[in-house]
Every structure is written in structure tokens, then in C-alpha cells.
Length: 137
Image: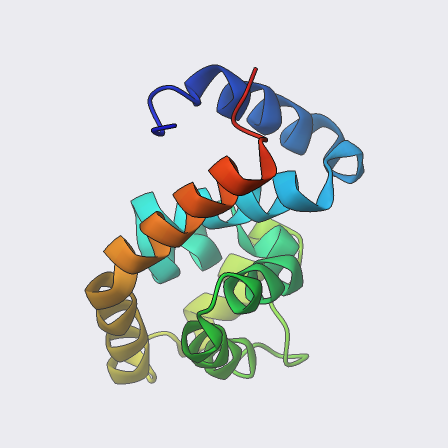
């Protein structure tokens, strides 16, 4: 199954994920958290939607076979005041803005490394969707 063929299932997962994240299955959470990375990248994860479920995203990356990307994101997490990105997007962006210029090199490096591996992440995600059957509407 391709992503296009799974679009209807994806839309339901997104609706559920935004309205009641805990209602998603473990496999659906993997899709919900990884898909936005493949379209927006690492920086987008922190400054837009995504970091609300940062730990789940890191775990999903590891389960899909990308512990190196999870580790790099962990380096970014440590820059936040409490060593983790706040769930609240406003708090997260306030925190981010206090140090993003100072750590621009690290942020660019992590994002560039992700984009170099993005196709592999996408392929692993599609395999996950097909293996678990969560792409069937």
C-alpha cells in the first residue's frame, strides 16, 4: 500500500490524534508522530506540531531503526530549560527563541542529517503501515 492509498486512514488518525491522542493505538501513534517529520523535518517538529509527543517520536524512530536520529533529537531536547521540550507550543517556542541563534550550527546539522536520511525513514514508515495494517480504512 502506498501513502496515497492509505490517505483515508491517515486522515482518521490525524483527527483522532489531535482530538484524543490516547485513543490511538501504539502503531497509529508511530505513524502520527513520524509522518510530520518526513514532511517538515526536525526543526518543524519543535516549532510547530510534533514536540507535544516528543518522547513517543523518539521511541518511534528507534523502533523503526533510526536510533541515531532519535539521539540527535535528544541533543536538541537537552537545550530546553528542563531538558525536554514543553508540551505547550507557546512555552516551547519561547524557550526555543532564547537559545536557537546560539545553537544554530547544531540545529542545522541535525536537520541536515535528518533530510539526508528522510527517504529511509519514509520507507520504514510505509513498511510499518503495511506490516501492521493500519493503512486500511
